[in-house]
Amino acid sequence: MSTLATRLGHILLNFNIYYLGAICFFGIIGNFLNILVFCQNTLKNTGCSLYFISLSIVHIIVLCVPCLSQVIFAISEFDIALHSLFWCKFFVYFIFNGIFLSRYYICLISIDRWLITSFQARIRQLSNISVIRRILVITTTIWLIFNIHSAIGFTLKDHICDISINSVYSTFYLILCLIVSFLPLFILILFTSLTLIRLFKKNLINKQASQIRFIELNEQNNGRAIPAQNRQHHRISNRNFQLIKLSLIQVSSYIIVNLPKAVHILYIFLTRNSKKSPEQLAINNFIGRMTTNLLYTHCAITFYIYTLSSITFRKEFLLVCQRFRRYVLVFIRR
Image (tube, rainbow, N blue to C red; front, side):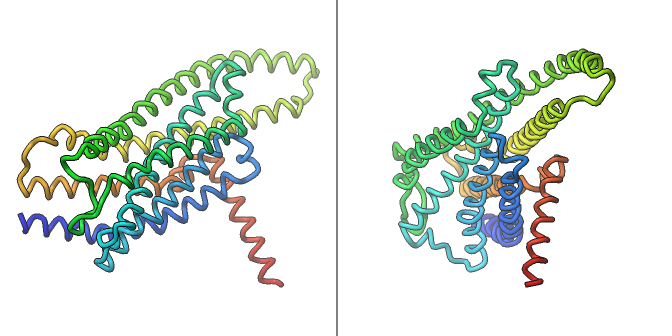
């Protein structure tokens, strides 16, 4: 057992140093760039951008606190959370809230894109900046208060920051982890499917309507150019379509990266009363840590996925780079 545990521990140590180190570095930079892009005038007026900005802020916190602490521990071979009760509870609270809020915001993005594709104007109006601000402030505050249980339930014993195995809280925590893992998957798959169905229906309707509208406009304008307000409406619709595309990509990447952790938690829950050999415990611990590292990966790759997949996002990012270049040149010339 000691040989297997030692080998797996050595693999994790090197993995945390090199892989998580790169994830922290590129992920923090990428999420800051996400915030800059979604704060641009062409995107910040859409409610969904607030969700993407909030998501990027949470990802930065996850990468700066729990993920970076793993890298520091791997390099220094000293984990302060295993020597201080305060830091044990502090890191647990930030880890749980970071992962929880990340999943929660992604669900809100998926629901928001479903709202914006509605055929009813009253439902589409729910996706506006004022409503979304209230949702973010109120619900985030509620979840931050609710998740205090994680800091209360975890304790430090024999240099191990964990919960008591046979306690009532351990059962509650495991069930909650199952809900937090699988419920977002269900919500994302449901609303993503509904959004795609609506887009397909609207695409068919819009093709027919656009042909009729084009004929009417030509007749009204005697062949002259289409009025500017109609072109503006098209740009706004295209912007919403690009945000829908980003949200669908976000959902797909979330499912791929988060599913292994959800399956592992389900396995732990189903086998919680089974006796495990030391080798099995070592393997379970290794898989648990590796699937957690995948969660950090998801927090780090969003900017690069958006850049590769969205023309609008790339254009806005290039504008950010051009503005930054002008500021640098002005500063140098002073």
